[in-house]
Image 1 (tube, rainbow, N blue to C red):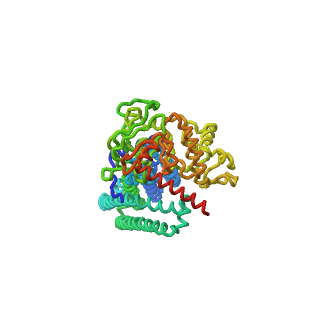
Image 2: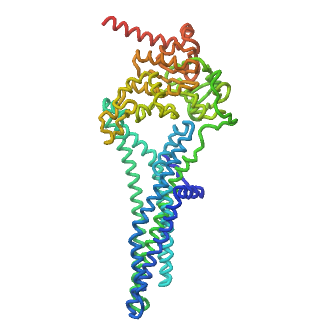
Image 3: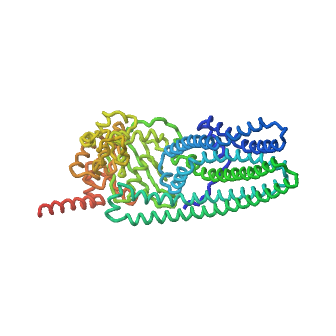
Length: 611
């Protein structure tokens, strides 16, 4: 669990101030003005009440102006409790909006996968998304409430000083004790939130498994509902236990502070009544004293609450600042070559070593290979050989730990990553099924032509999915999901679920939409297809990748036999390379795997013949 205690600095305060100002200076200034007025009204009410009560005891004193002012202050006191929360809510929403915009823009700017595949960063990101974006709004709201409490406290302390200066001592001591306790409580709450981040993600994970349509079949077939439900409840019980402890500590701290304040107020009231009996205070003085003691306590309560609220929000805001300020996980180009030139010769991996962490084993060990610009290269090998990792390096999701990947002789680290990826198309083994329309699911392959229906249809035709999509209730505008059906769509066929093979073709069409790329990466592009569909797809792919670099990864070795070069990985090393016939003659790992698969097909044919 993440026990790291976030900290805040002057830089955090400046960041909060900048966010609040950027979200809308008009709302911010209005909230400041309301804080000043809200702090002055209770003090004015106390003095005006004293004036009116003393005036009633003196029939010759004019009361019209004080009464009118008292009535006006009463109206303000009635309206402000509604106006302040409204303006603060508007300000908080505006700040939250700009915070979320910057948070997810910062995540999107991370060019690689190292941070996103780091569980500690994921914990930070979860906390930043859950509490960090509201942190600045809480800081601003708490700070302005603190201003209001301080001004009101100052006004009532001045009032107390006029009536009984000695009363300032117990009131001040009680306030300091409460303030110290509130700061300790806020630090404790921030630590608890840090510990809860990891457990909350796990609880959400199990809850998603229970609700997910993609996991529903296995969950029901294997009877996993009880197991996942029990694990979710275990995490939830631990979370609830931590929160209960926090609530109990909060009850103890705030209850003791409330009791201390009540004792001080009670002692002050005894003094005031006794002084009035002795003629040292007027009726108006007593009323003002009672209001002043209550006002001091209210001011202290607002100040202490806002201090704790601000302190805790600033601590949690540290997670937000950490994510937003995270440095890119890929080195920036040192030479700034500008646009990536079309691939002329090929891509070369030269003595590439890679591991995901300094304390983790090597995934690639001295890999050297070439992907020619106008040829098809196949990459095969057993599970865990490093094939998917090699693809991540080609797409520059990671940089090699040692060695280089060269694009026409230029190190990928010297090329702008965005320009590089525009020249790469790919279908990944773990392709995404977006809860969007069919057109969007394909158009996301090149957002520049997202509204070009002709290009999208052409890509669908090449992937062999056009007829299926065109036959949907709304054609290409049909939602490929039932997650977001709304009453606005009265067509019962609005959301359609595709089969696994159809989704595979949609993902392939998304890759083929980038028909001007230099490198096409196909990671198990036909894993979910039947034999006829697989043949059709590979025939279309051969035509599509003609004249460009192609990298085909597949466990079905029959689909790679026509590649110009087959590279065999095992244990993170290149153990064989060559054309299909040459590798079969060599009798190495590739030949053994190919014959093993072929024998399986032959046995199936024999079984059919005997049946």
